[in-house]
Amino acid sequence: MPLYYQVFGVLRQRILDGLYAPQERLISEDELAVEFGVSRATIRQAVGELVQQGLVSRQQGRGTFVLPTAAHVLGQRFRGSLADLISETQRTEVSTVEVVHDTPIPARVSTILEIGEARGTIVRRRRAMDGRVFAFTVNYLPMRFGELVSEAELRSSGLMTLLEQKGVVFTGGSQSIRAELADVDVSRWLEVDFGAPILFVERLLLSGDGVPCEFVRSHYRGDLYEFTVSLELAGKEGAALRSQLA
Image (cartoon, rainbow, N blue to C red; front, side):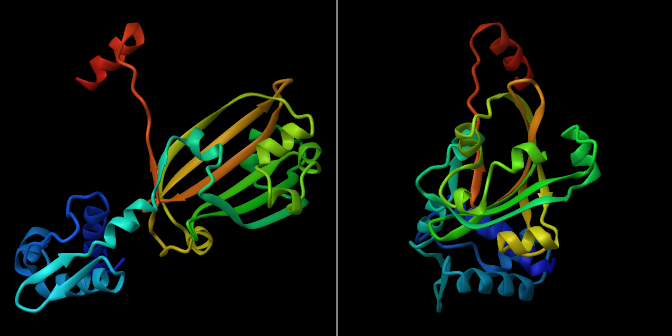
């Protein structure tokens, strides 16, 4: 990633996080060059990118100021837990759905799903919020579960909801969350630059008889999704957590 774009990304994040408030003047390009340890030309190119995205404006003789419209960009970010996202707020919609039945699936996924033959159903979906793509999800299902869903149904219903309507009972599962960089395929689906930071989630869901029924790989744009959790510091478990946070 070009050096100027890295600086641009940091400045953009500061604006979105409210560290630079609307109508606030940024520190001078010379000061930014010293802070980031780069040339003034690099800073000027990074600030130019902010201008193109409508986050700041240059005012001759006065400096560079954060535009009020930057607050609107911040407002487009999805805030909440993964449970909030899974429940699908009214602000999100499915923009693209692809369903392929009886197709090869990765060996690791077939092992997790306990499938003898590495074939099943793959569902690829792209979700948008306020007209902007922010999530790309790939679902892997054993054949007996995958044959219950279709593209037409998934355009108007969530996958878990649809499976439950078809008689599948979910009893539990596990998931992991980590930061990753977008590869070529993910960057295309999320409409971000190759190597852009994303939030990556893997989730395994179990059916009523304890059999794996769905494995999910989800990618969320780091600039549009914010993961939050609630901390309970009361009681025995809270005391243990408090000791870790101290």
